[in-house]
Image 1: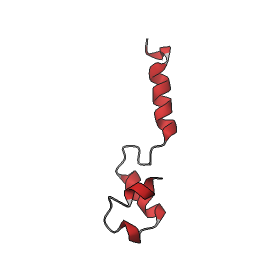
Image 2: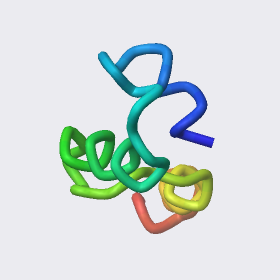
Image 3: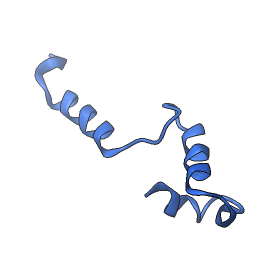
Image 4: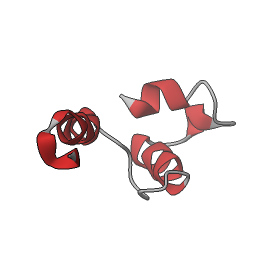
Length: 53
């Protein structure tokens, strides 16, 4: 999923493999990996829980 969108923004992306694109995207993330919907779901679940009280 990421590689399809990243190809529009990375120079010379059409000459890169999917793994190379994913490595570049992950390197600029604070997690040093690509984020996934489950990452957001865990945060939303925590914020909606009573743990914050």
